[in-house]
Amino acid sequence: MILSSTIGIIADDLTGANDTALQFFLKGSNTEILLDYSDELQNHINVGTWAISTESRNIDKNDAAKIVYDSALILKEKLNVEYFYKKIDSTLRGNITYEIFAALEATGKDAAIVAPAFVQEGRITIGGYQLSKGVPIERTDAARDPGAPIYESYVPDILKKQLGDNAKNMVDSIELNVVAKGAGPIAQKITELVEAGKKIIVVDCVSTVDFEQIVLAMQKSPYNLLPCGSAGLAQALAPHWLEEIKVNKATKTVPRLPKLILSGSATTLSALQLQKLENEDDYSNKSYFLCLTLKDIINGVSENIVRRVLDNLVQDNIVAVHVCGVLEEVKNEEGKNILIDEGITKEALSKRITKYLAELVLEIKKQAEFILITIGGETSRACCSAIESKYLQVADAILPAIPLCLDSSAQLVVTKSGNLGTTSTLVEIIQYLEHHENV
Image 1 (cartoon, one colour):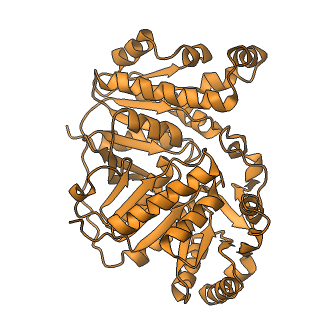
Image 2: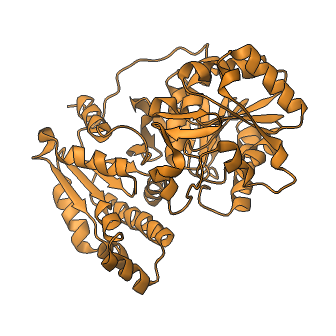
Image 3: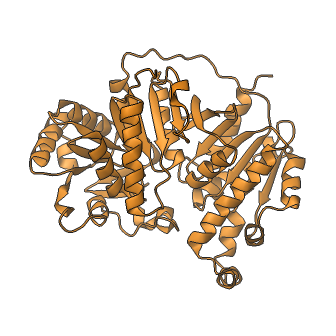
């Protein structure tokens, strides 16, 4: 019989599931991310936090809602989850409103408290507007996501546009003038809005103190509320949901293996992170960077590419395979014409890149051992699926929103969102792995 578990997280992509699950691991909860929840769940013992990645960000909204509903029922009925958390993208991509309503229906909650800020990453909500490092999200890389583009920055409107006219009045907001006054006024406003029939309540947040006050307000509320947000809100919730758990601070060791970095991310930040790692003097003699071309992606994984990766994936070397060159190619006329000739849209190209990297990691896995580092939500999930990872168990925190995971076959995996971190993040991941090597 499955032991009673406490927390269930539903995220629309794998990197989001992982960075949110990490917040509960850091408070002492044994944490697993389920990739294949048809697996025999009875074999998973002493798990305190479960996360499910629904991979529903870029699919039909009704399909997304059904997957979220089914996932919530699995957490509720099969895994005895007591506390539910709906992870949403802090740049508001995806079928957010449909997924929240599906989660509300499955869990029986009265309303959702939506706090999409991720203050630790420079993303705040103020006056209902979502800003990333002071820039409205519609002007950031997120706006150009081929699968889930963003056209505006006012969160209530983003959510309302996913609803029919009859349901739009179910969305409302609590702005900073109330949040700044603390938990009591926030709780009072939540009560007013729920009593008025509101189901989705967007809450401003510009600091970690605001997160803490929002969590306290939810606890004060007489209503059964569903928290929805990024890893930032989850971090504030964790000590309240897991306050009695003793944290094990044992130092984690990792084997001395080469590191394989696979990046399908289109963000400027990911490109800067790769460039920073490539220019790092400490790794110049043991790193190999393979910039894929548009031709590579169109033609599929070749023996030549596989051999180049394997020849360099030795000892404790670093091999990075990325698509920064492809993304530059498609900006010029020649690249655009190739896509037109091949009948490939930008969205289809994104899917081809994901498929390519998944096929590549499968071929490499057949012939080498390595620590896998993936950049981008779709890339991370596709690569884990390719090597038949049924679940990921959080083993340690590399950085506050980047976990070290062990999959169902003992493969070490590090996942990172394309929009997460600073230019030094990849360097810091490598430094962590080297510092913790069991030599």
